[in-house]
Amino acid sequence: MEGRIRRWRVWLIVPLVVVATTGFAQAKPGIVHMDYATYNPVSLVLKEKGWLEEDLARDGIKVDWTLSQGSNRALEFLNAGAVDFGSTAGAAALIARSNGTPIYGVYLYSRPEWTALVTLQGSGITRIQDLRGKRVAATIGTDPYIFLLRALDTAGMTDRDIQLVSLQHADGGAALVRHDVDAWAGLDTIMAKVQLENKAVLFYRNAGFNTYGTLNVRKEFADRYPAYVTRVLAQYEKAKACARAHVPELIAVLAREGQITTEVATLARCLATQPEILLLDEPFSALDAFTRMQLQEVILRIREETGTTMVLVTHDIDEALFLCDRILVLRGQPGTLARQLTVAVPRPRPRGDAELARMKDEVLGILDLRTAPAPQPEYSV
Image 1: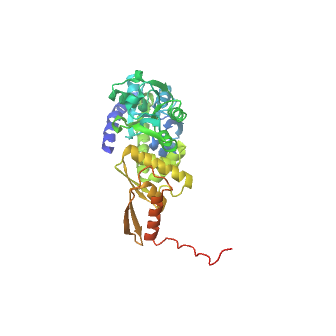
Image 2: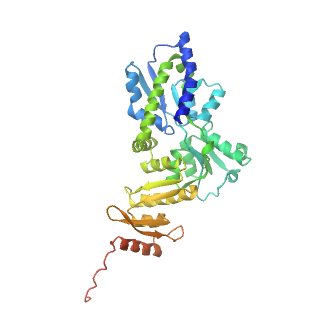
Image 3: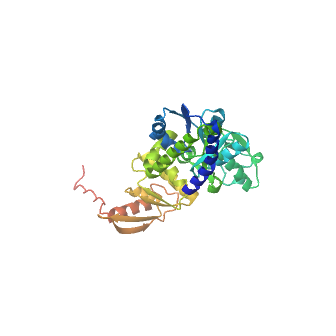
């Protein structure tokens, strides 16, 4: 992807440099207006680190940050001159340019799977055709909206076959939770939060229908200050490298800015690329018992929806028995395989199941942790 990004960037910036040589470029801006968004994690890292501020401060230039809550908002900000650089989906930017919005797309910050069609458990919606006549929330002009239209098309349907409810992304997720709509064209990180905390189901996913995350610059800014476009992109590259090298730090920033838990942010990041195998290393060890049980149910639901193979590392025997089909019991230092067990109890598994209790006792015995029975009194009072 890096090579692809660089080729596209050169193709787009060359015209800017040509414009600069014709005499329209000015010395420097007094302030650079940037947007940041939870759907653009690179922007969150760049804002957090302050690298752009450090670089531009050498020229006496300040940096101002504005939150974009969707491609439509970012495009509104760009069109109004409220931001100089705005984060959108590639399809949204392309449509905006075709409609005359004066912007250049100058950087690809990600190729995510950030949208899907979402409903609640028990809604009866399991396929695109089930949306006919239903209330579906979407943010018009954004990638989730375009995703919805393309999904409908696969079933020979259009937006006229549904009741389209135009809402901003966060409002759409809230409307789904309140049962005000039947389905929602979701956007992460809001989608991850609704999925993990409200038992929402991603009933239609298609990674190929997600477009690239695109950083756009106002044409007027680019024509006047091409050198500063290049400097902004250099700091974006630095932030992207940092995000890739320091994933826990990225998750912490994403959780804080998206107002979600780090567990939600972690799972959202892990599942975004539809991995064939997902490693969960003590994922719930720091949580209270009630939250741990809730997220265990979420893990099972995600596994059922995606078919992802999950490898769980845990010291919690009850957790292993509740979640897993096969258990490898390790003991000793270094750990060696002591026993392999198959859990044949069908799902959904009652937590108080007698067979699970028997197997727990078996695992305790393998680990020499079985508690000796308490001595019986020799007499009673």
